[in-house]
Image 1: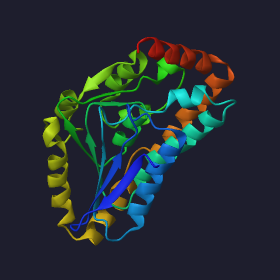
Image 2: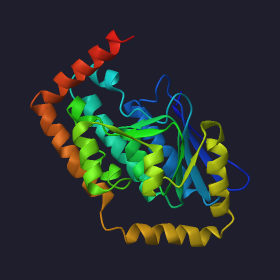
Image 3: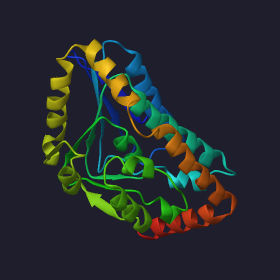
Image 4: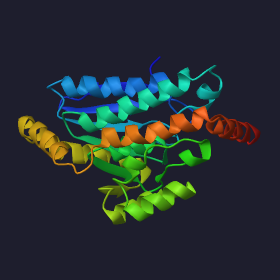
Length: 252
């Protein structure tokens, strides 16, 4: 069963929902499912705007580390890197605006999705972080840099710290900040204000805005991923992921 569902409303708003308990840490297939759902929505001319949301405790906890550590060889690592790349790319290159509706935690790959979204709506309990350095990986700095200023991004990256949605709201990267029980309604309200516009103009605007971006997010993220592969070949990443998986198991 797919961790991702897609529903098109009569008003042209499509809701793409991630649901992979307990924490929405997506498997390799899960990341490709996100990409497939967004690519299909992008190609559907009846879709005017997309809300990307999640069920459960938080929006997204990144890559499923357990799957990676329980898979022999590097297939899961390579798959996760390709899956994340495809999902982030699908958000950014979607023909219509993507609104990320973020609840609870949004870390690692979750930041990749949100950082590439066009608009971010968040619940007041949401927080964001890129803890990759603790697991011997690099990635999503490209996308965190779209949410916070450069030095803040570096501080968050090197310390593996998190930042609240309230702080991002002050930075201007979160458009609406609401209580969790109002999150979907707030996202729908923003989406409706887009859906009522001529979709031909909105699609042209999305392409134009991507065209004037100063940074190629796809190449930038791919560059980061190269260092993750180097760290894995050195054995550093596997050691740190084992430590992480062991600590998580001991806490249960």
